[in-house]
Amino acid sequence: MTLAEENYLKAIFHLELETAGEISTNAIAERMDTKPSSVTDMVQKLSEKKLLIYKRYKGVSLTEAGRKVAAGVIRKHRLWEVFLVEKLNFHWDEVHEIAEQLEHIQSEELITRLDQFLGSPDFDPHGDPIPDKHGVLKRTEKKLLSEIEKNQQGICVGVKESSPEFLQYLDKKKVSIGTKITVLGKEFFDGSMIIQVFDDQFFISKTVAENIYVQTI
Amino acid sequence: MTLAEENYLKAIFHLELETAGEISTNAIAERMDTKPSSVTDMVQKLSEKKLLIYKRYKGVSLTEAGRKVAAGVIRKHRLWEVFLVEKLNFHWDEVHEIAEQLEHIQSEELITRLDQFLGSPDFDPHGDPIPDKHGVLKRTEKKLLSEIEKNQQGICVGVKESSPEFLQYLDKKKVSIGTKITVLGKEFFDGSMIIQVFDDQFFISKTVAENIYVQTI
DNA sequence: ACATATTTTTAGATTTGCCTAAAAATATAA
DNA sequence: TTATATTTTTAGGCAAATCTAAAAATATGT
Image (cartoon, rainbow over all chains, first blue to last red; front, side, top):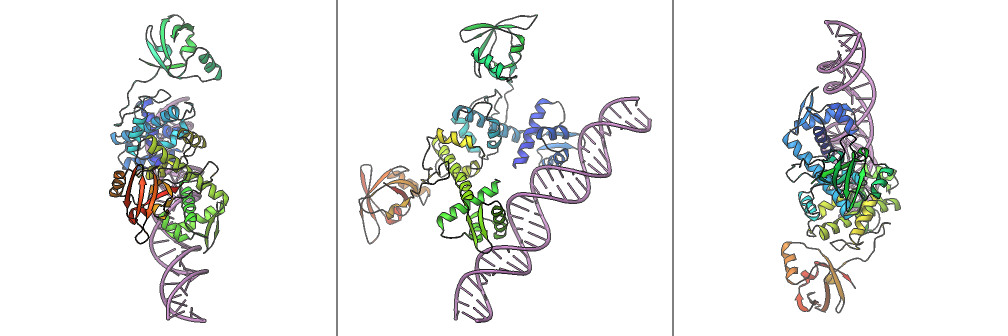
């Protein structure tokens, strides 16, 4: 696997999660910030290697082998992100670029040990699930806080809006990544909520609830 | 800096430590397991970038800029080796290949934090010194135990031979990286020694003494 | 010092991954 | 349904890093 090949497979994997049916050349080119003609070249090569199925003018879809490679790269990316945040104290929004490089380091044993060192985490610092060693991805995807029902709980795993104003608002309310939020009440007509964070209970608007990602527990 | 460029600079840096005067195309080719013609090409490119001085048919020598790049790569390599051994519990002879990959990750901040995380180590698991962030390499060179005189002491910093048999022999004698060794006696005619390790005193052959690196204290 | 051996460089090709420009296929719309 | 727009592919090229084969420079031995 070359670096370029891995990046193509990863991009296609992500596109398949977002899109129904075959993935177009154009979509891949846009995602990878490259030209459609370059995509055609690479896609033909990956097709020969049986990592994806390519039909001219139709698009591509990953084979089982291709999906496994892609999931492996994503696993590495996310484990390294956990390392960078948990062990090296990077902030969760500084780690993507570095993980983009680290994800291509080739060593099974390294990842096995890194995973163990980190306590086999299930999610990366953005709340995205980490595929297991077989490439299986837990589909416990993040939800918006606004989608949570009364009396349910969620762990804050990220935010949609990330303006300093919003982050400062959250700071003031003691909400950050990892904070447990309990929905005590929800107004039907405007979507506003009463939530509990640690020992404080307070009101939030629908707008706020629509900009916080949580993972239900 | 491309990966190939970094590898050339690193190889030349090592050769300069081992060799007096200019470094020949052939020596570089041999070290890098490539052809002399390829070396000529790359060396011309690095010369244009002012990373080394190249005189046709004469050889090369690193400029200050080139030396700095090389030392930076070596710094990263050795810090990652410490990480792999100290944090991920790799054995010190399993880490070279992985560090060869990790040394090319580009991020100043990452290395700053990694260094801190590891407690700013001075030596890698093989006893080789880690250049500081300015590329300065402490010249506390290692010696062979066989070069140590009677009544002198050394810290074991590595081994020359690394066969399982030899390592197991050392294990049995309780010698590992960091172990203090005192030379109590030395035979002139066969180079054998009596040494003290912790509270044990025992005999070792010249062969053994010639395969243990120590740093005198 | 001169013939031979060795080292180094040049010339020309190859592979990978990308590009531009033009052609071909497919989609859309009046 | 036919013209137009869009998407996708093909064709031809480029840069990086390598290679082989041959030429040029340097070194060596008697």
